[in-house]
Image 1: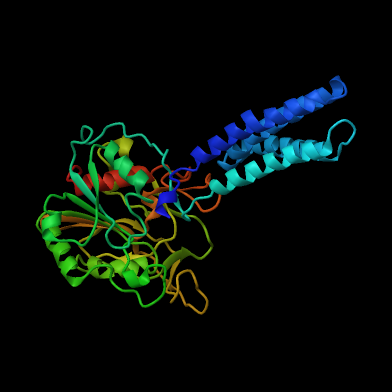
Image 2 (image 1 turned 120 degrees about the vertical axis):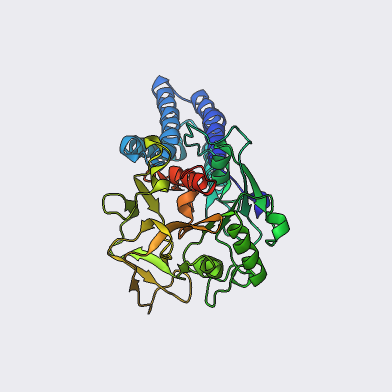
Length: 406
């Protein structure tokens, strides 16, 4: 389905609004006015046209979490427009009813088709217009260290998919960002400064998120990456909930981290916020950044898993009391699964390893900007209005891996 991938459904939505408002509705308005009996009926049609125009503008704004402002307008104009359309269908005095019905049906089908196109082909799609500020880039454009983003291990997140916005943000910080296809070898990694691996999978678990979970990487690849880091490479390894945590567990263990192949969730269903106030978000070089403007005060994650960090690692985020981890045999099926507490376990941590550096994150969406399943206005990840610091955390992590933060 990659050839039909819609990177940002706002493009389709805009085309739909333009087509409907500037072509279909005006055509219907002219048709109705020409057949109106008097000025009152002409005024009715003009009012119906303007009401429809306002509704089509306010509706998407309402869905963009601006409902407090636009919801009343959307509801009122929606009701009025529905009444007007019903009038067009039922009124038989001067209008050729069959022609009016066909005009209405064509307009209605146009909206249905455009709405269908507006649905992401994938359950989650990259938010291509996400553009957070980078006031003080690390490098001039294209002059920075080389970052490889892995997409050779059946990754759920890739540079040409859900990590498009992530790659674009890092490029705006001056880094050179490239996709890495195929297996890891010493020869292929020799020019790489920072390797990012997000949600890799073994081929047997692609579309089969069930136990057993196999390592996404061969023993030879794991040895190559470990040695590459030890001699100066920098690794950002991101593994989400089961089975993605299990697929990365063998690689993470080489650096002393224990990834648990489960789901970490709060018992009362609150949002997964990590904040400084309760020390679930820790103060360190990564969360402080280079200056007060780069300070990270809160992080929003989206489930993920809890892992254990070695004693020589520094936590970024740790789970406060109340969080439990479930270990289902099938993804998202928790029946007959007994959870265990994960207070103090990590969802982000970092350490030095030999001459190199490692950062582990237990959830992926926090460093992406995506549009959720269904209608495209649902923002999840760095672009969420509830995650104002997530993009800065990503930038700070990369800068630490690049030895720009000490």
